[in-house]
Length: 450
Image (tube, rainbow, N blue to C red; front, top):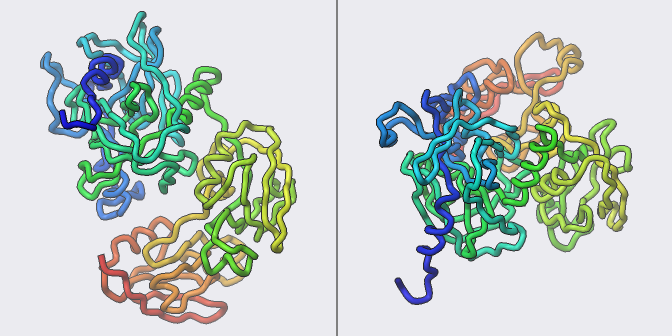
């Protein structure tokens, strides 16, 4: 061993028995290849390559006993009486879940509950005196700290990989309510749901996602903080579902250009772009243009920091929100409601950050019925909600424009338009037919190079 580097051998020996492999003898599970264009994830979508779930893949090693099966991921023992923690996406498509221990014992697991938003699932097996993990404090970890992952990459059980914590509080496009731990630990498909240990052998995270162009490890891995995971587990045990706090605002980052007119020396906080009707924010008197600086006494440096803080707050709890309005600081008391269950309602209700712009620099929405009737637009088209720096801004598009045709194809709906944008040829100009008021005009948009 090189002097000065940690010795992981005792840690692996002590913690390894607490890590389990999760599989299905009937071989069910989904991979990125299962999400076709009709589900909004074509193969050329950036999300297909960049943020892939760690589903077990075809071609992994078969179980040693020769049984037909498929490795779905990893998990770890929470308590001696058989509670197992893993990722929700690991078990969502399995008909029969098999938990395999380090000593080769196998158990059929029951799903106690699963929460898609946090990607946490709680399983239960009928066993006793199992080697449970020791839980750590994910809020106390530091960037640069050594961590160790144990799991079943590509079905190879009890594989150990080490690295450091690269960043904390990362916000990913698909999970606004999880402040991910970013590491450079080598994580691959099959590690999903496995534990991330600190040097004391305590679990500080649950390995969940990778950033990859190829599907394999490329130096960026993301884990769910164990504090977040355990809060979800306790709610699943108690009531079989998870409730989260809801503020009811759409927020965006304060840029350098926006800081000065809002009375800030430096860009900071979450800028409220919309307050939803009948939301806790509206009832508390929040307005569009307010900049949220702290939430329940915790600083909000960027808009992505706000949703996790709101989400972990209990429903019906009153918290103090410090904000900047017209250059003056003030404190508002807000009583949080419960985040709506329906995903579309949640997005429209602004429980997270404002939607990200596409590669054109556009944020678009469906055309409201009243506006469609006013313009005598029978079908199709999308409404430009926001224009950011990019090809659309340079071409002259504005918020309120209707996009009717893109690259010689009629725009039918929002999902189809985003697919057209994703698949448009890089570095080339495309013609876009826009209706502004009563007039229609084509604009030439040059797509950014790859």
